[in-house]
Image 1 (cartoon, rainbow, N blue to C red):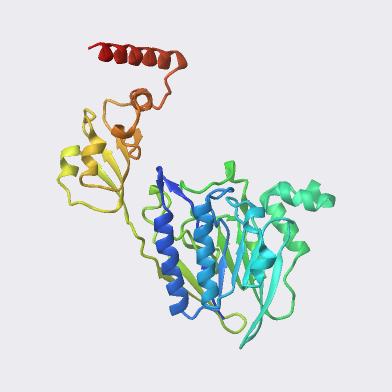
Image 2: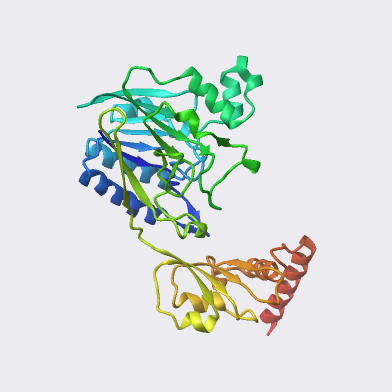
Length: 379
């Protein structure tokens, strides 16, 4: 049996005020092509289908189109809700979706949902465990609430109530949790102080564990416990990550073959450092770009000038010995498209380490604007 392991699609993601829906549509189409070429038997999506718990209509349409593409390939899909998802929205119409081969585990209950399959080597059971928190586990297991303090307590409790059968068959777990020892980056939402850490040992009875939550593809503890990672870079902190999909081939019990297939995004991502003059002399690129300017004096109109070379410039950081710390500016929302109060707020924040002008200061600005308008009308 050949499984395609995906996670952390984050459909509807906005990167520095830039919608990534076009990029996500491009990469999902690529994933469909891989599924067809690789003769996949089923697709696993380990949570965080959407970026927001209330996804936009456009985001929902894109995911619906992806599921339709899988259905057209006669590929069943098994997915769980992640911490970014609304379990109710993800599971909406799940009974109807099952008729098309889409099996959805929301988080109505703190439970594991199991689906029996079979191939030439015998029985395979897929176990789906949506994102789980201690409070959720306490709600569904009140008699054990005193013993459920950490995320590990919560997962252990649920697994004890829903263990894999000791039948000699092969068992695959799909989960969306943070395992101790995994590599993280800035774009991921983790609990303070590592409170959401759980031990990989909790999954010892599973032949393969398909994880979501962390954006870097990686193994944890053993080769068959893996994060698929996100299909796109969703932060400049993910620059060094090589995005891929994971192909899992289950053969006889104890024989699991794993292959990662690289994904090629619509736009690359770069972080470029230098003076404005040096960067303007560089070759143009369509990549998403974060520029770090090192001019001692912040250049005037830098964003507009940089856009002549980097049309997908997303943000600029000003780095100078004259500043106590770097000053960060979003490139989206060009000054010529801003009204004056918005432009003033942006300028004030830049000059004051991100602080907002007070209401009294804004009243002064508005009063001056009104006075200028009157003078202009009189002339």
